[in-house]
Length: 314
Length: 206
Image 1 (spheres, rainbow over the protein chains, first blue to last red):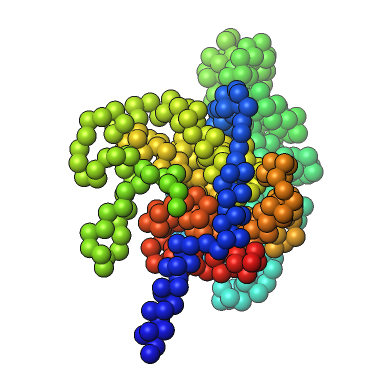
Image 2: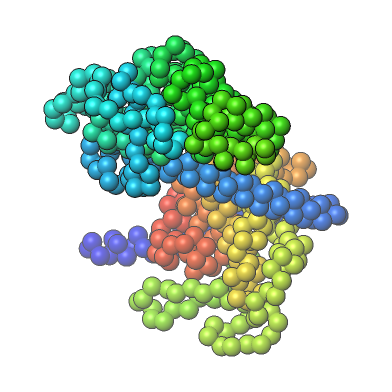
């Protein structure tokens, strides 16, 4: 019985598919005969031109979109990479040795003791190369108490506070890569002490970012000109401009400023020698010559006399 | 039943009980047999092939799209969309003779998309009402115009897939296998959709 009913329904369906009621046949006839597009002569060609134009627009749009997406993805990847590195550094999961930049600096040259770590007992050297102007002295760290404890506990403290306390500790442990990761989170205005500023500059340099050390050093020179560290900051600034940033004219002015701050100071001779070198590299032969003459007059037995004469052309 | 538009489609059923396997072939070509006629070869220059296809089939695409969607104001844009899609895919066309059938299948896909978008717009109240009377010659009788309006309103009220299946079957006069192929469904599903649509239209138009 049920099967017969199903068969009956199926037959009805087939009938529905094949045959239309009269009213529907009429409606379908109206659509078939009456609904259509009658394009005037030339419309097809016009439409074709529009199609070609639209095809070109779409190609341009696709190229633009592809470029934009690639740019955004690249920016995101770079940003996320930096964030991840900072997070790892902040949580102490990234070992100091893994920071390739910092470790390569350690290997490539002797590490000067940070002025702020050395404190006011740092003395400019009279003898020795320009890269070893600081005499190592017993380290006295003026640091805020570090946030110790479990990582989770540290997370409960605002990040800035953690960063402000911990970067000094990491710097004193010579973990400059990690210290720099935290230092980037500390607002510049929070650092005002010349020792802190010098330490921050040293951390940036040792982490392989000498360009980031410049603002700290400039602040020391401008805000604390009477401090001994101002001379050291000026000298370091000159070295960064000359050796790292390729700005010899700025370097020469920095070295001149060091000499002006303390003409009889321990850094004056080296500053003048480096000033000659900087003017020479800047292509300012007249200024290099003047500075070289000054050097010859002030330090007739100076250890850099030969090099200064050579660079100054005298 | 009149001859359908898409005679370029061939239906090959290996066994009656099995699912139909439908292939796109040139009109008159026997599936599986190699042929060296120019129509059986792929287009050598795709860009020129699209332009040639546009000149030949743009009015057909426009009429088909208009009858199925009734979107008169958008018909130029509709045709452009069809041929833009064709531009992307014509390189993969294996027989020039199948161009017409292939364009019809693209037309159905674009129509499906447009109808769905229109339904969505209607759902959120952004739909612009269509004056169905304007689709036909003003000279036809008011009764016929009313009938046409009721018919399209009934079509608007049903699911898009049912509308497409019914329109292809009864307005375009396609064979059931072709309807199934164009709708991307099995023969049984195509039949079910047509019957369901028929029921709705019969209730609405009477």
